[in-house]
Length: 123
Image (cartoon, rainbow, N blue to C red; front, side, top):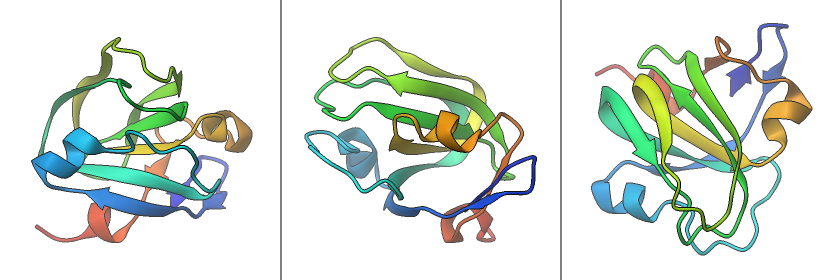
């Protein structure tokens, strides 16, 4: 769930990529994804994260989230198949990938909050 600064609550069904292998594979080779679907990458500890879109068919919006669930950086419309590095621009613990256009459609912004079983669990 994402809570925007305007108070809007957005619900998504996300797959969890917690292991190194799951994070490396991510959403590669997927040809479609429901509008309310996505993937959350759990990096275990806060750190600077870099990602790319090689072998990823779907254009994606990426939300870079700190350990408290706050969105710290957003990459909209990541280009399919690109090897360009997408940088978290600081320490994050999670990345949520959604279909491209979701950020703009629902006006998701830096500072908005993300809550899920993964993000809100106690260490």
